[in-house]
Length: 408
Image (tube, rainbow, N blue to C red; front, side):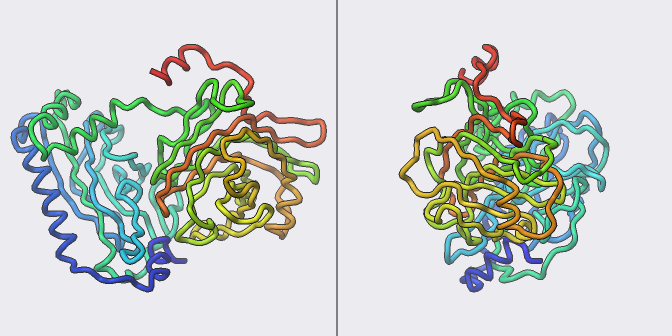
């Protein structure tokens, strides 16, 4: 099975190979700037520093040699791009590609941009770019990496790991670095991340671990628009990706339907979503007890009712897309959809029927075309005749403290 990176490179006909010195020089500049900004703090509030380069050609977990213990405060600074095709200007940022773990047992994690965290378990910090085949579990096991394709054009990620002294006020130190000169831009970016209001999904919803965290989804009160509910799950993406999930346990019968409300303001695509290089979309999905999932998308231009297997390696064997809406005619309107899940599975997936629906997902992808997407989801209900399971209720007012916390 090929990686998304490999597939893109093949799609781009191997692209144009630029001089490898350019990416090395870029890493050298990154290293110089980080070291210059931290030099006054070395041996004081900075206890340790590692500056490393991770190639886009992937490879095994890299042990940084930085031994950490519970309570240690660490900041990871990322820069660079993983180029999928320079010819087609296809790339994704290091924040999606670089994963970390402490010790060989994990759990693995990544940040949304730069990342400051407090260590929970002792071990050495290990780093890896996203593997050739999907993570097998949260410890960071994977089946293997493919042979590199056009290695000189793949780019890579620069990673700086800062270990702060136990008594350091990290926020204060970041501010002092940001105030000095342009070399401290990374510190200003990390401060901005820390100060930005956190976009919190509804209670009981969580991000899919194998894609990592995001700031895409947020529960909001009194959404705008005609027919708007009292609350909704807001979606805003721009060069980002996430899957938000909640657990259910519903028998799948010939009468099982999924009903939901949504309002899409901006489709995150400028062309059809059924190819690798253009697979950006927003959708709602159901996952089954056999590992398959069906996801209903609002397409840029594919015909309503069309279905296709996910074009991405690692997802092609388990995910089926069905076009529920298409085009710009109904953008900005609150709409209600209802689909018979059993019928769709039988027609679009086939094979033995699963017994149960185990999860409901909200999906947001905008890392390929890097087009902004905006929308909201309201009521989500699974029905079987007279039986209803309300997965998300949009007719309740959010508690005042939640509203204030989200709109300051």
